[in-house]
Image (cartoon, rainbow, N blue to C red):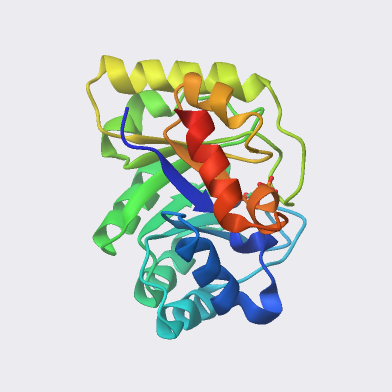
Length: 220
Ligand code: DX5
Ligand code: ZN
């Protein structure tokens, strides 16, 4: 298990002042920026694309940007996000015709690759691709919206993936996304996660720094 990473989901930030709000979360102690891309096709919501990511880089955001693609198809948008300055690109296996090929495409574009599993998606394909991934993301809500409640079943899934990663001696990060709060992050860390996305818990807090500190304290 690697050092804990806190990745605020800027889906919950103030879109009218996205650069400032993202910088504020990083200045308050966040490690990465979690960038949710929704297409009103794979998920029933519409958010932001590569131009917005590029604008954040231009604004001066230099932290790793963790792009969570909730789009279908995946492949044709990957080079655009890589060019815009993505650090890591994750996608859902259901959204790609050829999961192994998409992972290769992300890596060839110079980014790290992650695979995302919805609450009811089986982990089967991990058997074949885990060693090629930089990150596995376990969804603890159904994707599409921020501010939903954590689905406890995700804990069992995190334990299973943690076991797979450790059994194979890999350095793959294990990320969790959806309904993460300072109250439940301790048990999520205990289940094996080392990378924590939190949207509303951080951006709805009055004091980002205090909220992130409370999360780190609970992770232990
Ligand atoms: C949901 C997104 C999440 C979301 C998390 O589809 O992938 O990243 O922003 O928001 P919270 O932390 O509010 O559940
Ligand atoms: Zn996300």
